[in-house]
Image (tube, rainbow, N blue to C red; front, side, top):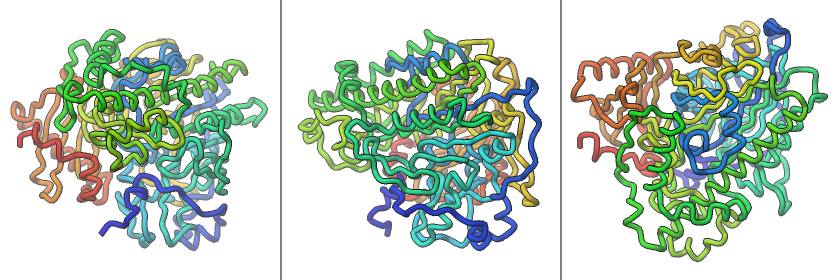
Length: 594
C-alpha cells in the first residue's frame, strides 16, 4: 500500500533537516573511496576562450510553462522582457526536454540522459537502498557524473545555483546521504533556493548553501523577486574576478500560482472565450511570427478534455480565473527576468553574457478536469466552492493549478502536455541571447536540440568540457552534444537520435521521424500501441503513419531498444498506478487504435 503522503512526497515534500556539510570522511564512508574521489575537484584547468575573456553565463529555467506560453512563441500573455531576449537573440522550435522537472534538470546538469544518472523520474523516497542497487529509477545522482557546474569551476568560473534544485533524494533514514546531492556538493560555490519540486511563493522552504533557513514572514515577500535579487547580487562586477555561471531555476510558473492581485486583474476577461479559442488564436499567431511552419496542422481537442462551450457559466467563470491567475504569474515572472537583464545592461555586462532560457517541460496537466484550488493534485474542492473563494486567487490561502485543457492550450500546436511522450510533453521554448556573438538576431532555429546538449554547449562557450576521469575516477559517458555552432549557423548539424521513456511510455526521434508508444497499465510492454510521425512534414504530430509505413515503424522500435539498453538500466519499469491515473494516460487509447 502506498503511504498516506505519497503524492506529497513524489511532487515535492519540503526538507526539514538542519544545516550540515559533509566531510571527505562522510563521503568515503557512504560511497567508497573510488566514487568519492569524483567530489574532489580536479586541479586541471581548461584553456581560456579564444579572445581571452570568458563570458558570464546565465541559465534561466521557468517551471511548467508550455511551448506557446511566451509572447515570442505566440502567446497573448505579456512577456516583453523575455520577448526582447528573443528578438535580440535566437528562438529554437525543436528543443526537447524530458517531460518533467527532475529528469530535465538532471540532463541539464550532467549532459547525460536522466536514466544514466538514476533520474528517470522524481527523486527517491522512503528508506535508502544499498548504494550498489542504484538504477535508472532510483532518483539519486551518481557521484561519478560530473556536473556542468563542477566542470565550469575547473574552467575558472564562480558558480551560483538559485531557486529550484529537485535533484536530491529524501531518504527518511539517511540525511547525510541525501545531502551528497545538494548543490554545494555538486559543483556550486553558492546555493540559495529550495530543494523540493515546488514551494509556497510567499512562504517558501528555503536553504542557503547547506543550512535550512527560517520561513520568510514578510507581507511584501515573493520568491521570484528574492531569487532575482540574489542573481543580481551574484552578477555584481566586484563580486569576484572570475566569470560567473548563474543557474536561475525559478519556482514560477509551477503551482502554486502565487502573484499579487493587480497582475491577475490585468487579464480580467481575457480568457472568458475559453481554451479552445485561445488555442486557435495562439496557433494563428505562431504561424504569423514564423515560430512554426506554415503547413502545421492543429490537432483536434484531446480525449478527456471538455469543450469550452459545454461548460456552464459557473465553470467558465472559475476556469477563466485560473488562467487569468496563471497569466499574471507569468507576466510577474517576466518582470523579474527583466530586472536582471536591465542590471546586466546598466553594468556593461550584457553584451558578453550568454543567457539561455528554457522551460523544463510542457504545460502542467496534473490538475485534471477541474484543477486544484487549495491543493494542486487530487483536490476535492468543488467548482462551487472555488467560485465562492474566487477573490482569493493568487493569494497565500490558495495553491492553484489550472484544469488540464488550459495545459493543452499552453502546448499549442502540439498534442497532450507535461508528462506525456508526445511533443506537448517534451517540446518547450529555448531562447539564446549573446549580443557579442549572435548576429542573426530574431532568427528561428529549427535544428533538433535536446536538453542533454545544453551542458556541453555551455562548456564549449566557456572553453572547457567534461572530464572523462576526475582524480582517477572514471566518469559516466556524456551523451550530450554541443549545439554552439547553431548560434551562428542555421545549417549546423546537431544530434539526430534521441530516446525517451517515463512512467511506461516511450518515444524515439531519428532525424525527421518520431515514434511514440503509450503503455496501458497492467499489460505487457510488447502490447503497447505505437504511432509514427514525420515531423518534417507534420510538425505537430497530427497524422499517424504507422499503418502506411510499418517497416519504418519497426526500425524505429528497434532503435528505441538499442538506445534504451545503451543509456538505461533497466530500460523499462511498470508505472505506479496512482501516478498513471493522476496523469490521465488511460485517455490515450481511444484515438490510437483501440
